[in-house]
Image (cartoon, rainbow over all chains, first blue to last red; front, top):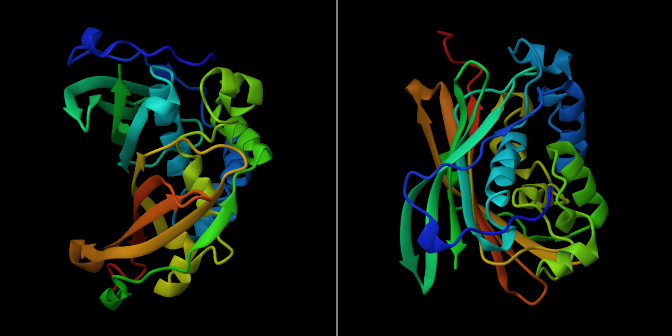
Length: 142
Length: 153
């Protein structure tokens, strides 16, 4: 994916939706890669024996893996250097096999410290329509 | 299990982490990110960055470079199998690029429980500065601890 070309502040309207990102099903392989790539070595995400010992039916995805998907959505819309904030609540567990769709829409436009800012609502939703992450982002536009 | 609210205000020892291209490469493979600004210095510079850029949420991976990693769990005396990530928020002041030597400072800002102590919440704030002392990012995370004693009488 090439670096995004940002929209103009004047062209953006509250309610505008970002092009959703539909991800491949979460695999055990991806969780292993994220374990190594993120430095989060909590075995609950890669070791089914450990996950069962702590009451889970299976391993599950790192919350931060899904938050990275929120980041990918935002930087598919504006270049990363224009992102001022990204935050989320992790609202339900993402299991192996889940198909996550990342979506976002514009919720506000404002000016602060001489910058034109656009606020976004961003979320990850699984194949059952349940939100797994409910977050927000702020970007600066020209 | 009950967490000690006297730990509110606890500041962890600051640590430095050097931003490395190889770590960003593996991180991007894991998250499916293919934009060349995260892998190719020339592409990153052409796009207006100082160098190969760390993805937005890679900052949390930098925190894993803490030589005292796991300090929160030791401080709380909580098993890693009991925690979940409740919330994470970042404010960005400047992109972080390969070669940056980032100093991270974390502290505990709140501890509270819900559902009669069945779930505990530990709120941490983090600041990241570059080698010149310039603020790069602030973070705020909430760790949820599942009380293994919940439901037992």
